Length: 183
Image 1 (cartoon, rainbow, N blue to C red):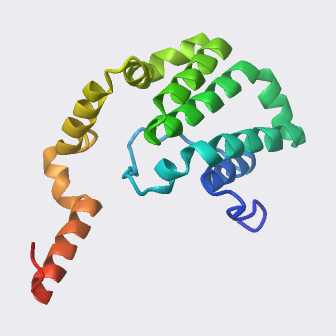
Image 2 (image 1 turned 30 degrees about the vertical axis):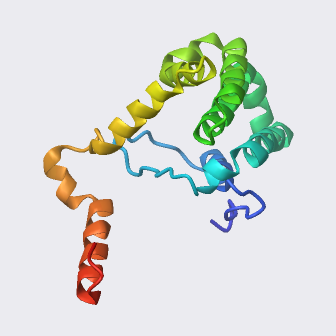
Image 3 (image 1 turned 90 degrees about the vertical axis):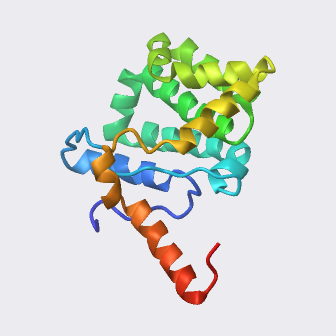
């Protein structure tokens, strides 16, 4: 880590993205198809409350940084359309999660203009943003509420007992019971 550098605290959202880019340029990255982490979104999360003010700025800042790094500039230039398409998709996702479907739809549209095949991987988020723009956002909210009630699909039922999030929840419940604050 001394060679690569640590997390850059001047980023609010994308400090890990920039770190992973720096790691990838110094060591071989190996694809691991198993999901190792999940994220949780809620109304008070910074990626929801601050989405419109910071996300785009930080994504553009990382691209600007990469374009100035000699070894990355060539890669960014060679994959310019895909790189910018991906940047727009990231921004759109945060805007959509932040409750700004119209702005998200515009970013998804920009993504498709840069590299049309990007639609195939994110069609459901495009569709959700379009539903919101057309006034049918309630359908998307119903879908996400339904999704919250199901366990993550990457886990088999027998694996759930070992899922760290559930273990933490059980621990929290046990602590509350011991304190006499059970709900």
